[in-house]
Amino acid sequence: MKINGAQKGLVGEISVPGDKSISHRSIIISSLSTSNSIIENLLESEDVKRTIEAFRDMGVNIIKEDNKYFVEGVGLRGLKKPKRPIDCGNSGTTARLLTGMLAGQKFDSTIVGDKSLSMRPMDRVILPLTSMGAKIKGRMNKYLPINISSAEHKLKAINYELPVASAQVKSAILLATLYAEGKTTIKENKVTRDHTERMLKYFGCNIYKEKNIIYMDSNSILMGKKIYVPGDISSASFFIVAAAIIKGSNLIIRNVGINPTRTGVIDVLKKMGADIKVINKKEVNNEPMGDIVIKYSPLKGTAIDGQIVGTLIDEIPILAVAASLAEGVTVIKGAGELKYKESNRLKAIYKELTKMGANVKELEDGLIIEGFEELKAAKLDSYNDHRMAMALSIAALKAKGQSEIIGYQSVNISYPNFYDTLYSFC
Ligand code: S3P
Image (cartoon, rainbow, N blue to C red; front, side):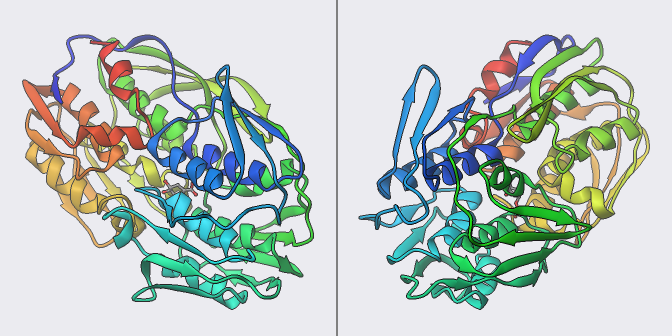
C-alpha cells in the first residue's frame, strides 16, 4: 500500500465500524442466553468472524439478515462439542474469552491460533481458571494450542487480584463464573475496559463493582436482548489523530463508543492541545455513545503513565504518531503490556517511526518520543499488526513523499474498510 503526504485536511463526516470488544461479547453472551438476540452494527472483521464461527461450530444459529445479526441463544448448557479445534486466528479476545467459557462445559475442546497468537501468553487465563477447578493444558503450560477437558463438576467461584491489567483475563474469569458455584470477586489495580461487566448486567446477570472490586453471582440466567454496537473508538482514533495533525481538518465521527474505560485517547490528545469535543451523548445497551468533533490544532508533548494507560492501551501506536509530530517530548510509561499484543508494539513503534526520522527511545515499559514538524516517507513494516498498519498509514500522511506500508492487509482484523475511508479524504 502506497500513501502520499496529505495535500489537504480531513473535512466532513464519517462513521467507523462497530466496536471489536463489544462485538465479540455480543456474540458470546447472546449465544449463552435462553432467548434470541438481535445485534446491529456488529463489526464484520476477521477477528469477530472467528468468534462467530466458533459458536456456529458449537451449534448456535447465527444468521445475518438486513444488516442485522440474529442469534438464537442456546442457554448456558446448550452448546455442543465442536467437531474441530476452535481456530481463533489472530484474535486474542476470542482465545482468552472462549477459554474461560469452555472451562465450564461438559465437553472437551481445543483452541488453536495463528503464528502470532500462538506466541502470546495464555497462562494469564490458564492459572486463575485452573484455581477455579478447570482442567486446561497448553503448549509449555503457556501457549496455544490448548486443550480444555470437560468439567466433571461445577467450577468454584474465585477471589482474584489481577496480576496484569487485562480485560481479557477479567472477562475469561467472569465467563467461567457463569459455570461456577459461589460469588466471584476480581480486584483490579489498574482500570481495564468493562464491556463484559456491562453486557452481562444488561443480559440479567447480578454483577456490580465497588471501588476496584467486581462482584459476580454465579447463578445467572441470561436473557436475549437487542444490541446496537457503538462505533469503535480504537478505530476512530486513527482519524481523530489524522484530523488533529493535518492543517485545515474539521471532522465529525458519528456514534462512537465513549465508555470511560476506553476514552483515554481523547483525554491525552486534549492535554496535548487537540481541539476535540464529544457531542450528542446517549446510552445504548448500557454503553455510552456520542459524536466526536475534531479540528486541527498544534500539539505539544505530554506524559502518559498510571491509571490512564489501561484506557488507551490499543491507542498507543497512534498516540506515538501524534507525539512524533508534537512540539517537545512525550514520555509513555507503564505500557509493558504492549510487548504481548499482535506484535511487540514498543519495538515496532520504535523501529518504524525511527525510519521516518522521528527521535524515539524504546524503554522496558514505554517510549520517549521527541516531536518534529514533519516526518520522512519510508518503506514501513506493519509486522502484520492491524493497529501498526493503520498508525503508520496516518504517519505517512504527514511525511514528504510516498511511503509504503508492508502487511497493510492486516487492517482486516479490526477495520476492513479503513483504506476506503482514508482515500475518501485524498
Ligand atoms: C481487549 C482487551 C485488551 C485489548 C484488546 C481487546 C478485549 O487486551 O488490547 O485489543 O476485548 O478484552 P488485554 O486484555 O490483553 O489488555
